[in-house]
Length: 586
Image 1 (cartoon, rainbow, N blue to C red):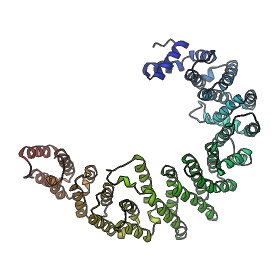
Image 2: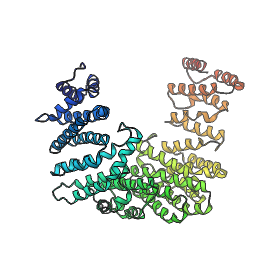
Image 3: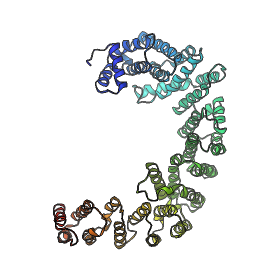
Image 4: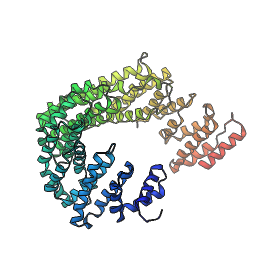
């Protein structure tokens, strides 16, 4: 395709993009969107009757929106007025079409950018609302534009200087009472479709999120009562938009450094609704987002105010509720909040504060322990297992490390008892080791004894489950926790298995450093392990790599020792091949 732009060629290029042949078409369309032909061709496509396919119309509207942002200051006032009226006409037409939301959104972006750059909202906004307040379909399109207007004030979306942008935002803030009245009026219209309420909530959430509505304004508005009803019941329809409004209110409360107690009480009152929503993951995720934001906002605003401690404890109860009742994917969003509490207690170093918060952390351990246990189906599965469980375990591990100083000896003893109990199923044993290795950091005096006792028990049980064996390797990887002899025994024990976890062993050979004699001994023993010859060679290569890193004072002696190894139980050709590998690797 050359750079000559016509309506037909643009349409062909968009269709080519849709078919998957994107290289030349993408280049052509990118050039088109920065050309002066964008104005006329996009307008021609949008005005054509009968209308083109929706993806063609959407591209044309998107191109106009981009061009408005690129070339706004080169247009004269009469051109801007014509463009605004034209976009409004296209929006009204699109509103009457089926499945036209993608087109409406792009037209809304163009209108929003045009209005924000024009900066005459004291008149234009009200005129715009009046033009789209007739037919129900027009009202729904109006709501889409009103939702997008605040989003377009992001510096990345609007090509204006900071001073001008602040002026635009200030002008919009002055329009907030008017927009709230518009939304109120829409709620009273009986001729609108059912999704008018969710769209009104989405508008309110958007204007709140971008600081154009204050929390106090919204809390005294009928829309908040509607959102609260949806969340308290709960009602599925509109639940996401109601939750987004609550989250926006909490975020703005933090920005404005003031949390309205009515808003906090309203969130806390959602606990029964959360329990009633069990089985509805999307609803649980919405509640979790609200609860986490309430905790975060309250935590940041009351860190230095001990008089509001009881309120904070109520928000922590919400976090415990999420940890206990939610699906794993929902819990993830709340785990980081526990690290925030733990850090504050550590920094304050106040015994009274420690006494207040410790029971909550102990309850969290009790809640998370069964939830972090692996499924029974993992018994003979090689790590890492599912990516979802791996991510969840990783997050829990980080939180456990952060909160280790909040854990008492009784909890450590309970976990240890689970591990050593002959009646414990393997899933509990594995989870017990997982929790212990993350929590024993605060028990340095007893840490080695705890680890050795676990190792002794697991060796006696001869647990075949790969995930338990991995926990053993993780235990010996804790710095300065066990002797090199213990590390050696654990590595060799794993290598003697029928299905050794070679990658897990390979990355832990450095734990034997700088005791190179263990590495040489391991090289001598390769024929004792049930490995393929290629795996034995990989192991020898890894050993040589570590030997090269030894201090100069001992590296020659170590190289000499490993090069003098004779494997008497293997054929001559294999032995020669291994020696060549050692010579080339060391």
